[in-house]
Amino acid sequence: MTILEMASLRRLDDVERQATINTAATMPIIEPTPTTSDVPLVPNLVHGFGLQSPPREGQFCFICLRTEKLGQFAVEVPCFRRFVGDQSGSIESRVYESDTAIYQRMNDFCYKHLGKWKRWIPYYGIVDVHEVNFQFLGASDRKGSFPVHIYPVDLDRAREEAKEGLKFGPDDEYQDYCREGYHCKKCSYASNMSYNRGGNHICFKDLYEIGQEWIKKLDVLYLLRDCARQPWIANGLRTLDGMAQGSCIVDTSSVKIPGLDNCYLDNGKLRGLEFVFGWQIDRIRHGLPLNITWIWISVLIVWICAIAFGGFGGDWNLGMAFGQLLAASLTLLFLYAKH
Image (cartoon, rainbow, N blue to C red; front, side, top):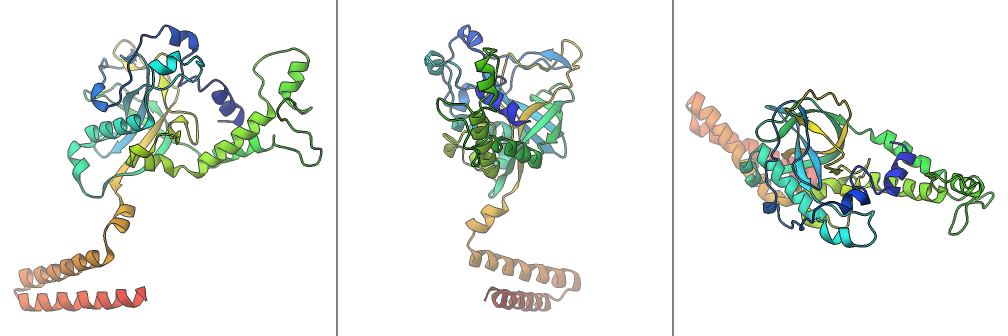
């Protein structure tokens, strides 16, 4: 994605995510959904491999997951976002859902497909969240998961593209730069306006600001993981508007998904969020006191040695003694390394 593409997303309020004003005007009134219980967990999709439109008016996003059993798959998560293009406030008052509610629903969908019992395992959960692109490989199963192939986002390339926007900043040598009420000579917006050509032209000042904002977002990609772990902090951070690329939230009228009707031949890629699950080592390090952790490890070492010697060799006293000696030796080594 180039800086001009990112600029057009910003100018058009991300047309893939936001419906046009004309389309929004004909949309039926939808009440806000503050809780996840108002949204069905399994989308009512037609199972097969053809084209089938999503069942609900509004928007949705895809979360991507990987398991040994299912491989790579994506899950559709319905959501309702603010129509930024409408300035009157009428659409904003009718269709809106907070980032907190959307992240909470993403969590619910993840555990629904990975196993609800995993939610209660201590220090197990979301390890990381990545922005990705993916491509459909088939229709959804009965649980609503689509087999997909996931493509990681090239963060180095995204950073280089973002730096391109900084070239449109103030020129210290000539002091000729775009500012309020004035456009520099090289600015395409000024040159086209002077000849009354019209068109979709972007000011250098906007490109420079977009480049700055893009680089800032690339520096704080960890916010995706933090918001997924703690949905209540997501409001105001605008992580769902896109960090390394555009927003992963799309309008229901702009995307077709595999269904039963006919052959699905669309080779285009969609944007999504990949949720990586596992043991949260960082939380274990900060959440468990070091002394308690070492006590449990020492007890475990003693019993492993006791079982190894007593169970196989028949000498439980020797096993317990050897385990205590090994635990004491490791404790001394640990204390020496600590100091």
